[in-house]
Image (cartoon, rainbow, N blue to C red; front, side):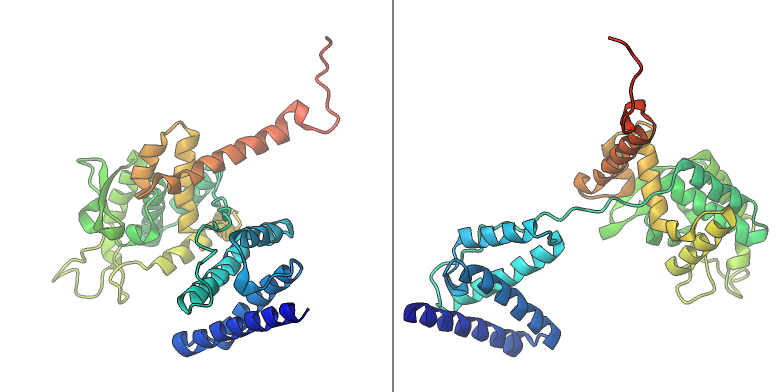
Length: 321
């Protein structure tokens, strides 16, 4: 009993020394410090049932603890944060010679499930396009051009609003985009998007700053009188929300990024290969693009569940053997 008490005191001293280091060397906030303390106390409570202390935990103890968190229904993101605290604690113990090894080095973090991206159906995209086509004047022409380009190319919203004036030409039918890290990629455009941009060019001067018409032209395809010189991401998102209301679609479902998701998913729906979609989206890693295949699979699964005669509880085929 005395030995256990001594071990508990040693573990408590190690935890307090670690927390003091966080404050002294990293200057962490009080709330963060409390979170670390809570995580380490929970781990200590788990080990106390094994008559072990936190500073003497084995790799097996750590893995068993993570498994216990998963069985208790803890979210993977929360469990990963807790493991991060334990890793830092044991790194500190090793560096300060409280122990000779670090049991966390071979413990894997729980895999976080990636939420499936929200998308719009093809019918809903058609509703948005029809609503934009019905808007009058330069504002309507610009919004239709923006929407057609976004759905035709899957651009990131920052890439779309910052497109240079010469980005879209009928000659090539291709859009050259400078994306993340300055990397360029080519994206084919639809005839509808090219027509929409050509119609918008006829009224583009309405969005130029005072004096630009006579002296200099804006370098941007979608200029603005604001400080950025071009339409902002925030303003475009607002315009899409307003358009959604006009189209009879819940505005919470609509954003520039949702249309980028719709572009990718609808391409895959119609037989596009994953590598081509990756290239058009500008993803460095194909694993990022693969999330859209899960969207397609999920939609097919729901389709079967909703419409297949055998998917309904108690349903019978009516066939005789």
